[in-house]
Image 1 (tube, rainbow, N blue to C red):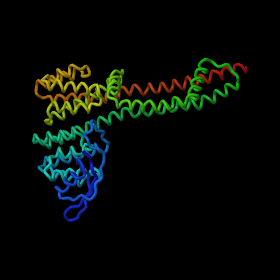
Image 2: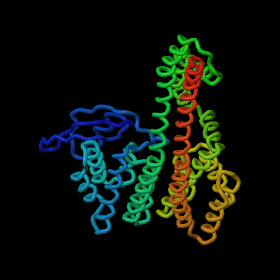
Image 3: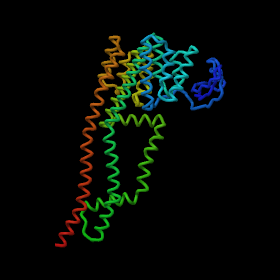
Image 4: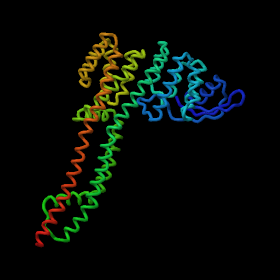
Length: 401
């Protein structure tokens, strides 16, 4: 399947533009003819095979939230699906989203279910969103499905915002600290070293050590600067290998502070997405399959793959999850309670709420501890450098006396 940008005309010669998914140009033309349009021009875009993982732009996520609010409001008021989508065409904030909405509306006019029309645009509507809509259509609870989509997208927005807010200040401080250290050892200290060498004064060990570090940075810049740039690029390319990527994610979970945070975020994503999907009527095996690509960690993903296989063989979900050490005891207990009470979707939602409150609190505590540590590091570096310069000066003054 490919995505085509097309121009067409209707029966009265009115020109229309849009985006549509089709196998080839002939199928695109036939599809437009069924809608009452004649193809004028078509340009093929990127392949639209369903992506394993969708990276949403900030603005696009907000567009989807607006779409979910719009559809929930109109459908709850008794408006039919096609007119509701048509209303979104008129209110779309940008041309690209408007073209997608118009393409979806045209598909609805030909009798295509909404979830199938959404699946034709995976870059805008990820698979989990389309499956929530499908569950709502099949259960007759489409307004409720859009309410769940809204809650889910707002949760993603809050999660991204909390992580960004917690990491912004330490990241900025560390970047400027690194630049300051480079400037200090490559520009300031060499000039003092030249002055002290001209004075022919005996240097203490700490001064010799600081000057040695400075000389190393000056004489090997052609090694460590490319290394700072190249190592992240090499790791990024190596992560395309499934085995290497799994090992990296496994190592992340073993790190002292970061590992616990990464595990909590992955479990939170699993609980939130599973709860939303299951409450909307998506079958449990489908929920597990969709959640696999949403947790953001391959160790947890592999655990869910094995869990899906075991559940398909009739093993209870809580028993399957307990076979993997990555799932905390609290999560296992809540899943067991949900299975026993028949309210698995609600209990998973409670797990997600717990982590939604705990993760920002833990982040603030961790980064609150990191900030004074960075300040102390800066003061320590400045103090050592100052002492290394001050001691030779004191020796020189003493010699003069």
